Image (cartoon, rainbow, N blue to C red; front, side, top):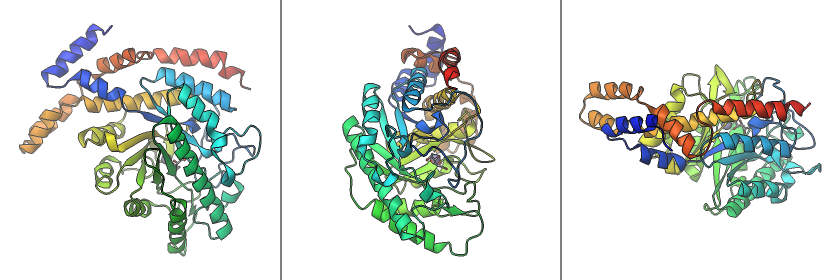
Length: 418
Ligand code: RNT
Ligand code: ZN
């Protein structure tokens, strides 16, 4: 039963020509891909364990109760999905395979190690996305993978990426929804390189080898993700934005824009409509950099709102795959998923409830005063009542009620993980 707060909000929006029911219907159809790696600080389930050195990334914090096994990670995810309204996806990294205690090196993985994830996803009504794990491995310890100067090491990572695409394609085929497999590599130098060209030529050739086989886009889509710098690759990153943007345009691949991978004052706001002029589709890693690419939990801030506004205003939702990417080990990890994902959905709802007609007609009429006025007025429209209604209809906790559920799980389950 909808509440009177919702009906009042519905009237307020209707007076502006905004249909809250249509917004709720659209919102319910947009999946967010939750990143598995928030659950265990980018650890994974390989026998070798987790060492992010040389990877350019780091999870900081030691909040107790992180998932140690595939079953624990699934149980934690199931709780997060119960607290997040709507039907969503899971974004898996290759190092999260079901290895059953056996060592299967990265270049040898097949769908066999991911069948239990596919079965689990099917049982939970989730789509899957995928990533080769080109870090946290002895062959990545000097910080280079696909652009490595050593042909043997390069080939190892090419083989890993090819294996990952095959797994992604099989996930998409079995689940009936295309898997986006995203290639991100850490390759770069701490200090000034002499030769910036050769690694980029090697990376181009390696990517060509990785993508040589065409895969049916009904099952699988390729994305490439750039970065500005990483920890230990402050001076040079082979896969820069310009590098991948050019590659993606030339090969008509998806470009992955990670909100934390640009200069601190640079946002995705202008990039979305720019890159979508030239690439078929977009993958977003919604994240929050704080001073650097620090992967903080996504909050309802101006950047997040602007990203979602762009997707709605530009009518790009059908060409955009929304994923999250952050890893905070200093707070409850299930809460980190829940907070960030609920915020991403909430921001999308706010964007769907914009007084778009007024904004568009003011702008088209050259009435920039009215445009600014409507933008500011829209900030105090009663979206919270519509958001609560969304949670109610999707049978998830309304408002802060989810916090108690996480606390109870922490007491009953996480506290036992010592
Ligand atoms: C790293 C990239 C990349 C990773 C994941 C774990 O800077 O953002 O997306 O976060 O692959
Ligand atoms: Zn990312």
